[in-house]
Image 1 (tube, one colour):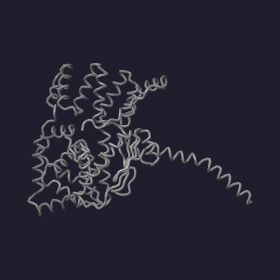
Image 2 (cartoon, helix red, strand yellow):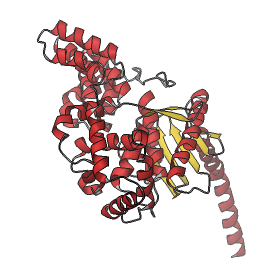
Image 3 (spheres, one colour):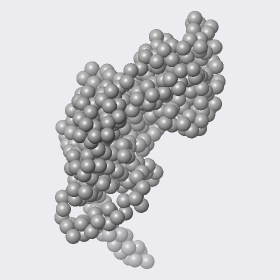
Image 4 (cartoon, one colour):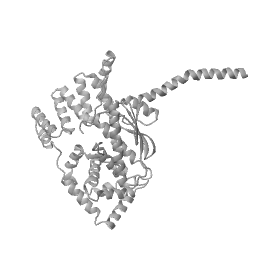
Length: 427
């Protein structure tokens, strides 16, 4: 019996020793995939280039300092945050990581919170999508993670407004400052609604809306919320004090019942300041009425009034020159070129839109069809994948996908298209 046990034990050791190198290799392989770049506040794991990873670490570190400073205005902070960032160059590897962590996959190009011990210690992960959206998505998710305090469930308009405000900024990592971006899509929407909203209450209904009620009108509430928060944060002299009072008067019940902090805030302001909700409403309406059309919009209106393709394209060229960061003008021109069967020009412009706003479904749709028309199958494969991630209807593209699959079967070694990783050229 002893001999049997001894033989069994030896066999186990031999078997284990045979497996052990494999286990070690697997662990080492996991380490090799993502390299560690540490700082006082952040441990960054990344398989992007060393130059880009170090730049992003500096950027992220500065952004944490900035957010920490903003939150210090709202509540007392005793400790420095410690954050883990995991960044994959391949969204396929990132998807595998999410599956391994049993985290529901939404849209793969978005950053997700993948671990959380507290609002001060958490992990967020993501994959590189494109130059602009990568940084915007990071800013969005980092801000949400900082606001993730179960004891203080902020009103949804506050939570969403802060996140949208932070996402729509350019961050200057060298001196830890931000420059608010005038979001053209939001501003155009609000500018077009100026007359319709002139005699309507805006502040009170927004401040009293629950999460469920807010989500019933997202097309209106996203731009409205962003504009109100921008007004309070950057324009109104007492705006940050109002936000601070909302923050201090919020608790775990506030998200679905925002009336309590709303009344406490304005009761406090009436007792301590010569200020009222009516004044705030009137001042915001003055701010709203002062909004001007976004740059290039006069050329866009001329384009809409023309019926001659060459003239329409000329107006859109002038609009793009006046406002190179707009998505509306290059997308409109991409449609025009597609209509006159200039498919390569249409694809180039659709790609420009996607580089500015990767979630632009109409531009993704156009990129798919234009790629197909010019028989650029590497780009077609990429934009189909990206379009599906953004929620495009797969059934609509079945004939195109079948031709793509036939091409890939016949040319298995065809090169893959992937946008280059670049530094932030627009800073």
